[in-house]
Each structure stands twice: as C-alpha cells, then as structure tokens.
Image (cartoon, rainbow, N blue to C red; front, side, top):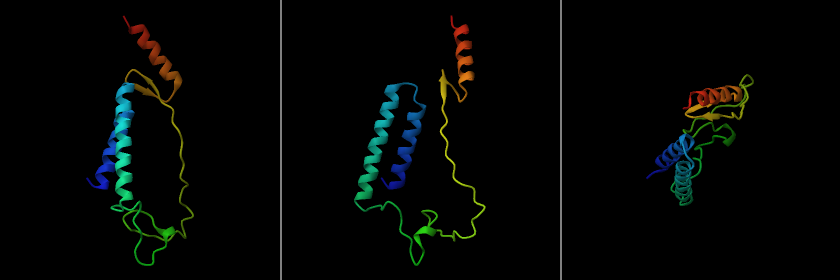
Length: 116
C-alpha cells in the first residue's frame, strides 16, 4: 500500500467517524484513523516517502507552492486575500444538523410534540 492510498483511507475513516451515529462506531473509526496514522508515520520514517518532496534545481523553499513541484514568485501578490479560519458549532437533532441553536431547539420541540 502506498502513501497516497494510506492517506486516502485515513481521510475516509475520519469522515466515517464524523458521520457516525453512536459512540462505539465513532471510536472504532477513530481507532482505524490512528492505525493509518501509525502506518503513514512508519512509511515516512522508513524513508520510502519523505514528509515533503524536496524541490529540484535552484528553486527557493519559500517559493515552493505545492507537492507537484510548481514554483512562483511571491513578489507582486499584494491583492491575495488572507487565509481565514473559523470554528463552526453544529447542533444535532436526530439526523439533522444546525448551526443556529434556536433552530435546533425549535426542531427538538417539534419532534417532542410529534412523539407518541
């Protein structure tokens, strides 16, 4: 199994863990993720796959933009938007997901009324 296949399987296991309905399933998928992480580390440590490919020729490391080997000058990139990260809280009600607590509470109330 090569590095790309291991990384793919690890990502699929992470997605399965995220979508798991119960704790035991989620834990089983997370254990699988940990196993793949160990295999990936072992493969990289064996020097079969370095962590990142080294650029060839006289390319500068600060110009290295991806694992495909492309380089570009960073000068003149004044209009490039900044990288922004944000955390989104999700509320789960049954199979539905909400980012607004009021909507999640309203759905929960609707389900409580419909329950026998």
